[in-house]
Length: 241
Image (cartoon, rainbow, N blue to C red; front, top):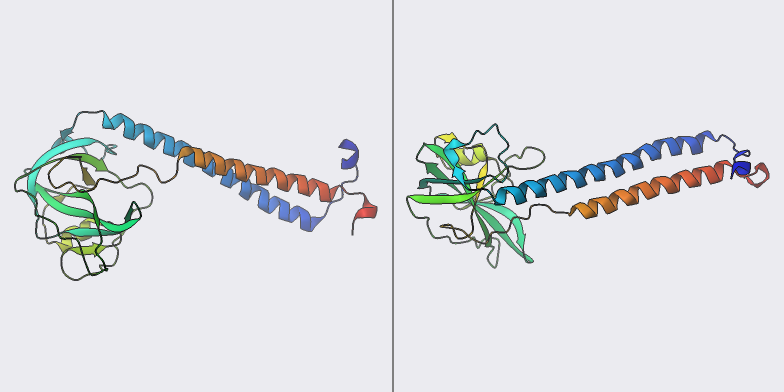
């Protein structure tokens, strides 16, 4: 190996390609490792908070870490306005997540996620949902979106229920003309709670182990790139084209 290195010849094109690609491959590998750690932490938070006793929603501070906190509250549902979050797949079937506003006894507006409902035979066949009891006792967990802030998707229907692409709670509240102080996150209703539909909310889309596997692939590519660079840079001069 050391004897071969004596034949090293600097090729600026080959070296430029190497110094451009190597940091990219390493960065992608370390990014996947970071994603693995994020997923493990999120799963740990989820498992831990599933064991906690529910607390009153009014006692929460929105500035705190509320992800998956178990809560309970009583309020008056807005049975006139449903929002259908589009393109939700459950067991291979297309459907929606159903969201509905509830005004709490403390005069706060909370959007609850009732779960998944199937799409009809066509896009025009929207789910028909029974009204929630009034007053409504809600049990569930707070869901804080992970990633970039969401924005309002284009409404796909003019009437109600209204189909949306992504969540934007202020716009949803304005569309329903439901005045009041808004709780900043949705509450996913608990199993067996009044109005609960199919509860299907995967905590993560890829397992931590898959991110580790992707990291290994990127690092392997970085190693292969290095070996190829050394191979072509250290060939004896009579073999170089």
